[in-house]
Image (cartoon, rainbow over all chains, first blue to last red; front, side):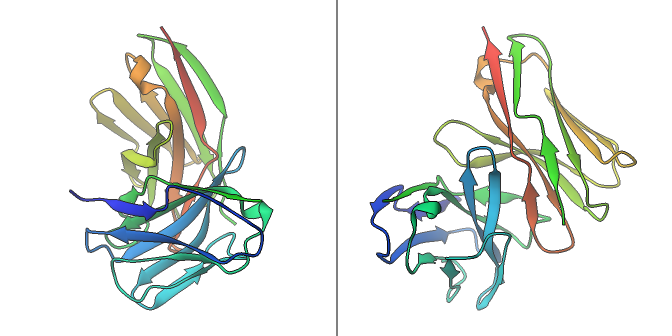
Length: 113
Length: 110
């Protein structure tokens, strides 16, 4: 089954404790991206990747890092999480770029206390 | 920069038509999308329209595009309770990004 898998689905952590949210897709898609969804703000793009070893900033990259060492994986790293990063995070992939259908993961609800 | 605007809420009675509106600002948009988000789930693509089209119909869904006014709409015919969700308009631009609106929460009253 074609899917985008994020882990964990839920995470509560403390300020400053490094964490990684994993994202994996099994569709051989080139393009992957991370979004955060906040009430009243909709979805905002954090980072995206056009292919292996190619990443670029989205609209709200501060406080986040990503890597794309393999085509299927695109982890989101918070080196020093802060409470304002409490949000619902979505990973998405598409065959080539944003001009092709995006498939979304189920989301990761992160709470930073 | 690019901006996509949607009204936040819409309430309709079961069996009526729903019309969700969206405006965008980037005239270089190539594709425009409608995504649906059900509670506790990720987004799923509903339909899309290429920027050189005016209309696209797919079963109960009709997408209308007015390029001059940069206005996009999604009409859902015979709205059902299962259509209750948040609907996102999104535009793909030449900057390799997909820009989403804030989402319209559709509530269907039985």
